[in-house]
Amino acid sequence: MSEVDKQEILLSSLFRIVREIHTNSDPAKLPEMVLQSVVESLHAERGYLFLKGEDGKMEVSAALQLNPDEVGGLGKTTQTAIKRAVEKGEVVITEDARQDPRFAGASSIIMHDIRSVASVPLRLGDEIIGALYLDSRLGENSFSEQSGDALLLFGSLAAQAIDQAQTVAALIDENARLRIKAGRFAFEEIIGQSKAMEQVFALMERVSQTDLPVLIQGESGTGKELIARAIHRVGPRGEKPFLALFAGNLGEELLESELFGHVKGSFTGAHQDKPGLLSLASGGTLMLDEVADIPLRIQAKLLRVLQDGQYKPVGGLKNLSTDVRIVSATHSDLPIRVKENLFREDLYYRINGIEIRVPPLRERRDDILLIAEKILRRFSEQSNRGHIRFSRESLTMLTRAKWPGNVRELERTVERAVVLCPGLTITADHLIFTRSAAGDEGPEDLSLKAAEKNHILRILAESAGNRSEASRTLGISRRYLQNLIKEWKDEGIEV
Image 1 (cartoon, rainbow, N blue to C red):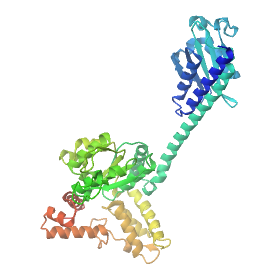
Image 2 (spheres, rainbow, N blue to C red):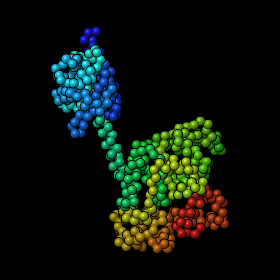
Image 3 (cartoon, rainbow, N blue to C red):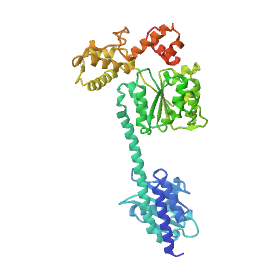
Image 4 (cartoon, helix red, strand yellow):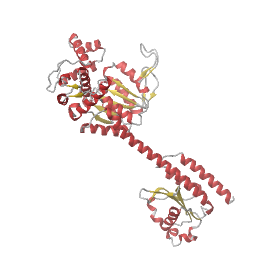
């Protein structure tokens, strides 16, 4: 085979390598891929790939058949070849290093029995970003001086591929950093500057970039769903669906159908197949609100979803797959429910990849006025009421109130005050609390929650305290009714 034919084969091989290299954007793997490819094409025995570090010094980025720690041991041979490639941008090729005056006096040539040497600069425009070093201890010459132009071109193309991969990686890192930074911007619906909320924000930022299951613990009205939505929106699943299911007021059969879907004919009224939320939320996030209220039988099915992403619809025979992130929320003490055998221990550890405890409003009083002002501005604009402000006395009352209903109660209180205020200043007379700062009953609560409570208490009274009968009349689960009663008792209300 003529020398020209050899160079055409080499050039063709190098171009093929470059095409493959450009399809790989992983900067961690690319140096090794470049080195492996050129070693195979030139039939070299071993080699290094050097890249310029942030300090400007050349560092070993990949090694083949050589330990990176052995670089110094190659001595003057490596140093001479790399230096000429880096400083002069030249391809250094020697077909027999023992006879080459450039390596005269290099004891490493003899010690390592090196025959052929090649060093190729990785040139990016006017800058040398690295170099390739190759050698061979075989009896025959592995490299040829005629390969110089092809290797110089290869070095430039490889440098472009490496730079491109590093640029893409930097953009990905920057995008992730900006997403986290934007996370605070995306979290702005969740207002707070207190130390307690700073800890919540820090956890949200960290967990948003992962697929870990999240358990959000907090009292009713603390904004658990807002937190779940913000974590989803900022994370890599942010463009995919976010669906939420409140498990506290659904019967077992309906809950199972909502979660897993059902097939036609599986029960009375199932006139067609229906996908469940696990299917509809695939690729995105599913929030299970009041996860503690899920019955044990359904907990077992949910556990399998968290283990291997598999489930069966109600009445179905085939397993379906889903790729969904589970975010759970509850106001209940799950470890206690586990001890009471009301919640599976294995499921508890599955959903509790990381726990975020949302502090009640009474533990973050520094945030009360911030939240109240935000609610006031928003509701005033919606009501076309102009620039309404709080009086000093009303601000004092807001900060001293106990807020058993947390942010949700604060929101309703401020909104009512805007409606009741005839002018532009909210006074103490316009603030109607469910419970005052001293714990005494305030004026009549006109909220929907209060009306719901009064209605449930009336049905309980009519049922002579029979909770099963009351839950059937109300159309809610007995467990949900029990949780409501527990909440009211915690608030000091006799039931």
